[in-house]
Image (tube, rainbow, N blue to C red; front, side, top):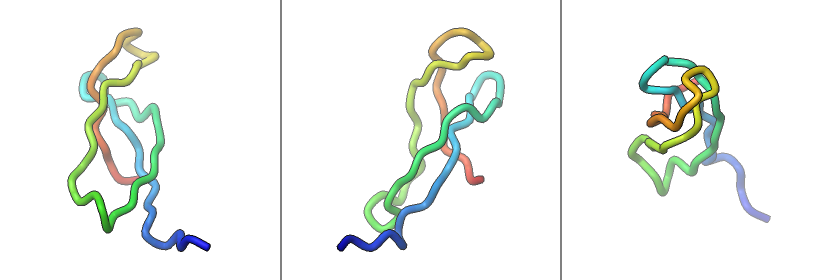
Length: 55
């Protein structure tokens, strides 16, 4: 059975309006850097870059 101790939950924050729209998990042992993805922002009504922030 796989261990679940290394996975952390984080939020994606819009870089334009600073709203926290999405959640995600990642393995902190394998991925050290912060994630940045293009996601749809419902406040701006367009696709904008979202960066990882802590909860």
